[in-house]
Length: 496
Image (cartoon, rainbow, N blue to C red; front, top):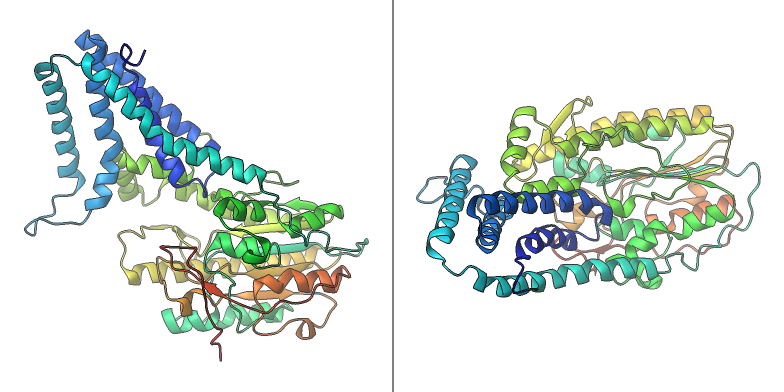
């Protein structure tokens, strides 16, 4: 069969999607590859059908279509690799040169295949084998990751920490502002005075930990730890599959579920922080045509990069940024409405803001800054503008929660790490975070302290409101560079 039937165009179309999926498997839902996969297979099938009708030779049509598919699927990657490069001072790697060059190359390859290669059928067996071989690694990576995530027992030994609940037990809101740095870092690194927001939190009864640091420098590590109120080495999380499982089915979630709390979570655009099986998982008004980040990434690796870049240039937005804005706006509105419901809630709200992509101006206006091409100053300004925007919105959410709740809720507003890698890879800037607690009916200063880290947040909450007896852990921070998240090194708290 491998000698007779030229399957390799279809197999190569599969590889283009599976390889990208395997590279990003820890960050996406497996279902996100389905539309790119359908598109790639349809493209390969249509292209082969057209060429077969024209050439009247299935082997010749297969070789020509595979060549064109290779150019189509590699265009965006080649463009990204050489974007901005110059030869003798001339910028050759621009769409107006790059795109015609690929089209001419494609036409030349088809002509050469038709005119010069007489025995295209002799190549079929080898190309089929090569295509099958290419599929082995991404297929294995995807399947093994799925199996590890399914097999991982994510609920930790701390899941039975809640010993009592009653009608007065508070709702608990865990609000993560992704990449939100501490006040002194914002002032030192970007010249932004965040005092007004900190004072506004304190005026609403919050305790703001002035010297708090994250336990880890990256979202997956940080939230897997804080939601299980323990360090990852103690939890035995040695790879992303286990960390994702810990994050999605955490000890704190299990503890509240066992006590009859309803779980509320939100779409975030990052599958690792999406609890799609939560009791309440609100839609954000997306349409069928709304693209996920993975789908946008896929388009950017192909020749459709010409269209996506033109769309960014003319509309200043991308399909993904549109979806991101909808998610953020929907989350803000839904949080304000939760107190009107008549159940006990544990709410996990991960805002992917002020972290890039940047799509909110300081006043909430639709804005888009491309981190790949913008200057450091432009990125820094965009980051601060998103902080200004989310400050205002979060204060309104807090006001609604405090005003509308029958019993005053516990609210934690926390950065998972400091400013993102687009801005800095310096641990002195990455580790310090915003960390604020609203703990009603107790003296917060007796339960909290300036250097508290996220690993102890729920230990305090469980001890104070649910009669648990969890010892507080030593507050430790571990930095890892963006190039290697597993290269953890202790980072001391140098807050003065």
